[in-house]
Length: 324
Image 1 (cartoon, helix red, strand yellow):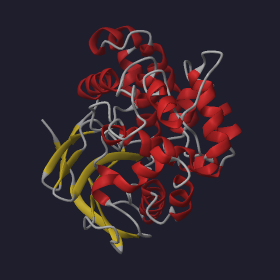
Image 2: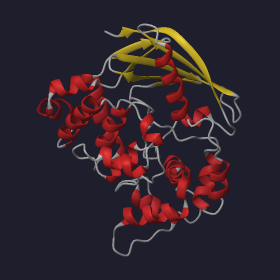
Image 3: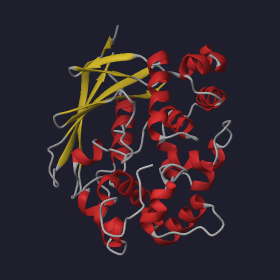
Image 4: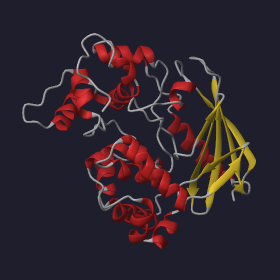
Protein backbone atom coordinates (compact mmCIF):
# COMPACT_ATOMS: atom_id res chain seq x y z
CA UNK A 1 0.00 0.00 0.00
CA UNK A 2 1.47 3.34 -1.01
CA UNK A 3 0.82 6.80 0.34
CA UNK A 4 -0.32 9.35 -2.24
CA UNK A 5 1.31 12.78 -2.35
CA UNK A 6 -0.30 15.72 -4.12
CA UNK A 7 1.35 18.35 -6.28
CA UNK A 8 1.76 21.40 -4.04
CA UNK A 9 4.61 23.48 -5.44
CA UNK A 10 6.80 23.88 -8.50
CA UNK A 11 9.86 25.90 -9.41
CA UNK A 12 12.66 26.05 -11.94
CA UNK A 13 16.43 25.87 -11.50
CA UNK A 14 18.71 27.82 -13.82
CA UNK A 15 21.18 25.73 -15.80
CA UNK A 16 24.65 26.59 -17.04
CA UNK A 17 25.61 24.80 -20.24
CA UNK A 18 26.75 22.19 -20.95
CA UNK A 19 24.22 20.15 -19.01
CA UNK A 20 22.91 16.71 -19.96
CA UNK A 21 19.86 15.60 -18.02
CA UNK A 22 20.11 12.04 -19.36
CA UNK A 23 23.78 11.63 -18.41
CA UNK A 24 23.35 13.26 -15.02
CA UNK A 25 20.36 11.17 -13.99
CA UNK A 26 21.12 8.05 -16.05
CA UNK A 27 24.46 7.08 -14.56
CA UNK A 28 25.86 3.59 -14.90
CA UNK A 29 28.88 2.84 -12.74
CA UNK A 30 30.64 0.80 -15.41
CA UNK A 31 30.40 -2.13 -13.01
CA UNK A 32 27.04 -3.09 -14.52
CA UNK A 33 24.93 -1.12 -12.03
CA UNK A 34 22.53 1.71 -12.85
CA UNK A 35 22.96 4.19 -10.02
CA UNK A 36 20.45 6.50 -8.37
CA UNK A 37 20.12 9.87 -6.66
CA UNK A 38 18.07 9.30 -3.49
CA UNK A 39 16.85 5.71 -3.38
CA UNK A 40 17.43 2.48 -5.31
CA UNK A 41 13.71 2.78 -6.10
CA UNK A 42 13.94 6.17 -7.80
CA UNK A 43 12.19 6.14 -11.18
CA UNK A 44 13.66 7.42 -14.44
CA UNK A 45 11.50 7.53 -17.56
CA UNK A 46 11.24 9.67 -20.70
CA UNK A 47 13.18 12.71 -19.62
CA UNK A 48 11.87 12.78 -16.05
CA UNK A 49 13.15 11.55 -12.70
CA UNK A 50 11.07 10.77 -9.59
CA UNK A 51 12.63 10.70 -6.11
CA UNK A 52 11.61 11.52 -2.56
CA UNK A 53 13.46 13.23 0.27
CA UNK A 54 12.96 14.44 3.83
CA UNK A 55 13.39 18.09 4.71
CA UNK A 56 12.50 17.81 8.40
CA UNK A 57 11.02 15.19 10.75
CA UNK A 58 7.66 14.11 9.41
CA UNK A 59 7.97 16.09 6.18
CA UNK A 60 8.44 13.98 3.06
CA UNK A 61 8.63 15.62 -0.35
CA UNK A 62 8.25 13.76 -3.63
CA UNK A 63 10.19 15.35 -6.46
CA UNK A 64 9.68 15.09 -10.19
CA UNK A 65 12.66 16.55 -12.05
CA UNK A 66 12.34 17.35 -15.76
CA UNK A 67 14.46 18.95 -18.48
CA UNK A 68 14.95 18.65 -22.19
CA UNK A 69 17.64 16.10 -23.03
CA UNK A 70 20.02 18.52 -24.67
CA UNK A 71 23.34 20.06 -23.73
CA UNK A 72 21.83 23.49 -23.21
CA UNK A 73 18.46 23.43 -21.44
CA UNK A 74 17.77 26.84 -19.96
CA UNK A 75 16.21 25.48 -16.79
CA UNK A 76 15.34 22.30 -14.93
CA UNK A 77 11.77 21.89 -13.73
CA UNK A 78 11.09 20.72 -10.18
CA UNK A 79 7.61 19.66 -9.09
CA UNK A 80 7.21 19.10 -5.33
CA UNK A 81 4.54 16.68 -4.05
CA UNK A 82 3.53 16.60 -0.37
CA UNK A 83 0.71 15.47 1.93
CA UNK A 84 0.06 19.13 2.74
CA UNK A 85 1.42 22.43 1.49
CA UNK A 86 4.84 23.44 2.77
CA UNK A 87 5.34 26.68 4.66
CA UNK A 88 7.20 29.51 2.94
CA UNK A 89 10.25 28.69 5.05
CA UNK A 90 10.11 24.99 4.18
CA UNK A 91 9.66 25.70 0.49
CA UNK A 92 12.60 28.09 0.57
CA UNK A 93 14.69 25.29 2.08
CA UNK A 94 13.61 22.82 -0.59
CA UNK A 95 14.36 25.24 -3.42
CA UNK A 96 17.77 26.18 -2.01
CA UNK A 97 18.81 22.61 -1.16
CA UNK A 98 17.69 21.01 -4.43
CA UNK A 99 19.37 23.76 -6.45
CA UNK A 100 22.64 23.12 -4.62
CA UNK A 101 22.44 19.35 -4.96
CA UNK A 102 21.65 19.39 -8.68
CA UNK A 103 24.90 21.31 -9.42
CA UNK A 104 23.08 22.76 -12.43
CA UNK A 105 24.55 26.27 -12.26
CA UNK A 106 28.12 25.11 -11.69
CA UNK A 107 30.69 26.20 -14.29
CA UNK A 108 32.39 22.94 -15.32
CA UNK A 109 34.41 24.42 -18.20
CA UNK A 110 37.61 24.38 -16.05
CA UNK A 111 37.10 20.64 -15.48
CA UNK A 112 36.96 19.95 -19.20
CA UNK A 113 40.09 22.01 -19.70
CA UNK A 114 41.83 19.99 -16.99
CA UNK A 115 40.61 16.69 -18.49
CA UNK A 116 42.43 17.41 -21.74
CA UNK A 117 45.72 16.63 -19.99
CA UNK A 118 44.76 13.03 -19.12
CA UNK A 119 43.90 10.67 -22.01
CA UNK A 120 41.38 8.54 -20.13
CA UNK A 121 39.67 11.56 -18.58
CA UNK A 122 39.67 13.35 -21.93
CA UNK A 123 37.85 10.39 -23.48
CA UNK A 124 35.38 10.18 -20.60
CA UNK A 125 34.60 13.90 -20.74
CA UNK A 126 33.86 13.58 -24.44
CA UNK A 127 31.56 10.57 -23.97
CA UNK A 128 29.74 12.03 -20.95
CA UNK A 129 29.75 15.72 -21.80
CA UNK A 130 27.27 17.63 -19.66
CA UNK A 131 27.12 15.08 -16.83
CA UNK A 132 27.05 16.71 -13.38
CA UNK A 133 27.91 15.43 -9.93
CA UNK A 134 24.71 15.10 -7.90
CA UNK A 135 24.65 15.49 -4.12
CA UNK A 136 22.02 13.66 -2.08
CA UNK A 137 19.93 16.16 -0.06
CA UNK A 138 18.85 13.61 2.57
CA UNK A 139 21.78 13.02 4.93
CA UNK A 140 20.42 9.72 6.23
CA UNK A 141 20.15 8.39 2.67
CA UNK A 142 23.80 9.34 2.13
CA UNK A 143 24.81 7.63 5.38
CA UNK A 144 23.02 4.43 4.40
CA UNK A 145 24.75 4.47 1.02
CA UNK A 146 28.18 5.10 2.54
CA UNK A 147 27.79 2.27 5.06
CA UNK A 148 26.55 -0.22 2.46
CA UNK A 149 29.44 0.64 0.12
CA UNK A 150 31.96 -0.45 2.75
CA UNK A 151 33.90 -3.54 1.64
CA UNK A 152 31.28 -4.46 -0.94
CA UNK A 153 30.91 -4.35 -4.70
CA UNK A 154 28.49 -1.87 -6.25
CA UNK A 155 26.08 -4.71 -6.95
CA UNK A 156 26.18 -6.07 -3.39
CA UNK A 157 25.80 -2.54 -1.99
CA UNK A 158 22.72 -1.89 -4.08
CA UNK A 159 21.11 -5.16 -2.96
CA UNK A 160 21.65 -4.26 0.71
CA UNK A 161 20.13 -0.82 0.16
CA UNK A 162 17.14 -2.28 -1.67
CA UNK A 163 16.50 -4.58 1.28
CA UNK A 164 16.79 -1.77 3.85
CA UNK A 165 14.45 0.50 1.88
CA UNK A 166 11.98 -2.34 1.21
CA UNK A 167 11.76 -3.33 4.87
CA UNK A 168 11.83 0.10 6.53
CA UNK A 169 11.03 2.75 3.91
CA UNK A 170 7.60 3.94 2.77
CA UNK A 171 6.00 3.50 -0.64
CA UNK A 172 5.02 6.87 -2.08
CA UNK A 173 2.93 7.57 -5.17
CA UNK A 174 3.18 10.94 -6.89
CA UNK A 175 3.26 12.33 -10.39
CA UNK A 176 2.10 9.03 -11.86
CA UNK A 177 4.92 6.92 -10.40
CA UNK A 178 5.66 5.05 -7.16
CA UNK A 179 8.97 5.18 -5.28
CA UNK A 180 10.24 4.01 -1.90
CA UNK A 181 11.45 6.68 0.50
CA UNK A 182 14.48 6.61 2.76
CA UNK A 183 13.58 4.88 6.04
CA UNK A 184 12.99 7.22 8.93
CA UNK A 185 15.72 7.10 11.58
CA UNK A 186 13.03 6.20 14.13
CA UNK A 187 12.05 3.11 12.14
CA UNK A 188 15.68 1.96 12.15
CA UNK A 189 16.09 2.59 15.88
CA UNK A 190 12.88 0.72 16.63
CA UNK A 191 13.98 -2.27 14.55
CA UNK A 192 17.42 -2.51 16.16
CA UNK A 193 20.71 -3.82 14.82
CA UNK A 194 19.98 -7.53 15.33
CA UNK A 195 16.77 -7.47 13.32
CA UNK A 196 18.30 -5.34 10.54
CA UNK A 197 21.27 -7.69 10.33
CA UNK A 198 18.95 -10.66 9.93
CA UNK A 199 16.30 -9.21 7.62
CA UNK A 200 18.57 -7.16 5.33
CA UNK A 201 21.74 -9.28 5.41
CA UNK A 202 24.02 -6.33 6.02
CA UNK A 203 26.33 -8.08 8.49
CA UNK A 204 28.45 -5.89 10.75
CA UNK A 205 27.06 -2.78 9.02
CA UNK A 206 23.85 -3.03 11.05
CA UNK A 207 25.50 -1.40 14.07
CA UNK A 208 26.67 1.52 11.91
CA UNK A 209 23.19 1.90 10.39
CA UNK A 210 21.64 2.18 13.86
CA UNK A 211 24.39 4.58 14.95
CA UNK A 212 23.69 6.75 11.89
CA UNK A 213 19.98 6.83 12.73
CA UNK A 214 20.80 7.83 16.30
CA UNK A 215 23.08 10.60 14.99
CA UNK A 216 20.25 12.08 12.90
CA UNK A 217 17.80 12.03 15.81
CA UNK A 218 20.35 13.30 18.32
CA UNK A 219 21.78 16.17 16.26
CA UNK A 220 18.73 17.11 14.21
CA UNK A 221 20.93 17.33 11.08
CA UNK A 222 18.57 16.01 8.40
CA UNK A 223 20.06 17.39 5.18
CA UNK A 224 23.54 18.01 3.75
CA UNK A 225 22.94 21.76 3.48
CA UNK A 226 25.12 22.68 6.46
CA UNK A 227 28.00 20.64 5.03
CA UNK A 228 28.26 22.91 1.99
CA UNK A 229 29.30 25.74 4.31
CA UNK A 230 31.44 23.72 6.74
CA UNK A 231 35.17 23.24 6.15
CA UNK A 232 35.92 19.66 5.13
CA UNK A 233 37.75 19.06 8.43
CA UNK A 234 34.63 19.96 10.37
CA UNK A 235 32.44 17.76 8.17
CA UNK A 236 34.81 14.86 8.78
CA UNK A 237 34.93 15.43 12.54
CA UNK A 238 31.13 15.62 12.69
CA UNK A 239 30.52 12.45 10.70
CA UNK A 240 33.22 10.42 12.43
CA UNK A 241 31.17 10.50 15.63
CA UNK A 242 29.03 7.85 13.90
CA UNK A 243 30.14 4.28 14.45
CA UNK A 244 31.92 2.83 11.42
CA UNK A 245 32.21 6.12 9.51
CA UNK A 246 35.80 6.67 8.41
CA UNK A 247 37.58 8.67 5.69
CA UNK A 248 36.13 6.64 2.81
CA UNK A 249 32.54 7.05 4.01
CA UNK A 250 33.10 10.76 4.61
CA UNK A 251 34.34 11.13 1.02
CA UNK A 252 31.10 9.53 -0.22
CA UNK A 253 28.86 11.82 1.86
CA UNK A 254 30.63 15.18 1.89
CA UNK A 255 29.82 17.69 -0.89
CA UNK A 256 33.45 18.83 -0.84
CA UNK A 257 36.04 17.63 -3.40
CA UNK A 258 37.07 14.01 -2.86
CA UNK A 259 38.12 10.93 -4.82
CA UNK A 260 36.08 8.14 -3.15
CA UNK A 261 37.97 5.22 -4.62
CA UNK A 262 37.66 1.79 -3.01
CA UNK A 263 39.10 -1.69 -3.43
CA UNK A 264 36.65 -2.43 -6.26
CA UNK A 265 37.26 0.62 -8.43
CA UNK A 266 40.89 1.19 -7.40
CA UNK A 267 42.69 -1.31 -9.68
CA UNK A 268 40.84 -0.16 -12.82
CA UNK A 269 41.37 3.54 -12.11
CA UNK A 270 45.05 3.07 -11.26
CA UNK A 271 45.66 1.41 -14.64
CA UNK A 272 43.69 4.06 -16.52
CA UNK A 273 45.56 6.91 -14.84
CA UNK A 274 48.97 5.22 -14.83
CA UNK A 275 49.23 5.41 -11.05
CA UNK A 276 51.64 3.00 -9.39
CA UNK A 277 51.72 2.01 -5.73
CA UNK A 278 55.15 0.60 -4.83
CA UNK A 279 53.97 -0.08 -1.28
CA UNK A 280 50.83 -1.83 -2.54
CA UNK A 281 48.42 0.80 -1.21
CA UNK A 282 46.57 1.58 -4.44
CA UNK A 283 43.82 3.60 -2.77
CA UNK A 284 46.23 5.92 -0.98
CA UNK A 285 48.31 6.38 -4.13
CA UNK A 286 45.21 7.24 -6.19
CA UNK A 287 43.91 9.72 -3.62
CA UNK A 288 47.29 11.47 -3.44
CA UNK A 289 47.41 11.60 -7.25
CA UNK A 290 43.83 12.94 -7.49
CA UNK A 291 44.45 15.63 -4.88
CA UNK A 292 47.61 16.80 -6.65
CA UNK A 293 46.41 16.54 -10.26
CA UNK A 294 42.68 17.17 -10.09
CA UNK A 295 42.31 19.38 -7.01
CA UNK A 296 38.79 20.77 -6.68
CA UNK A 297 37.69 18.65 -9.65
CA UNK A 298 38.64 15.27 -8.21
CA UNK A 299 35.06 14.14 -7.57
CA UNK A 300 34.18 15.01 -11.17
CA UNK A 301 37.22 13.08 -12.35
CA UNK A 302 36.20 10.05 -10.30
CA UNK A 303 32.58 10.03 -11.49
CA UNK A 304 33.47 10.55 -15.14
CA UNK A 305 35.99 7.71 -15.08
CA UNK A 306 33.78 5.25 -13.17
CA UNK A 307 30.72 6.00 -15.30
CA UNK A 308 32.64 5.62 -18.56
CA UNK A 309 34.49 2.38 -17.87
CA UNK A 310 32.55 0.53 -20.58
CA UNK A 311 34.14 2.84 -23.17
CA UNK A 312 37.50 3.35 -21.49
CA UNK A 313 38.38 -0.34 -21.28
CA UNK A 314 38.33 -0.44 -25.10
CA UNK A 315 40.68 2.45 -25.86
CA UNK A 316 44.31 1.89 -26.92
CA UNK A 317 46.60 1.62 -23.92
CA UNK A 318 43.90 0.27 -21.62
CA UNK A 319 45.03 -3.35 -21.86
CA UNK A 320 44.49 -5.15 -18.58
CA UNK A 321 41.84 -2.75 -17.32
CA UNK A 322 38.69 -4.56 -16.19
CA UNK A 323 35.36 -3.41 -14.73
CA UNK A 324 35.98 -5.24 -11.48
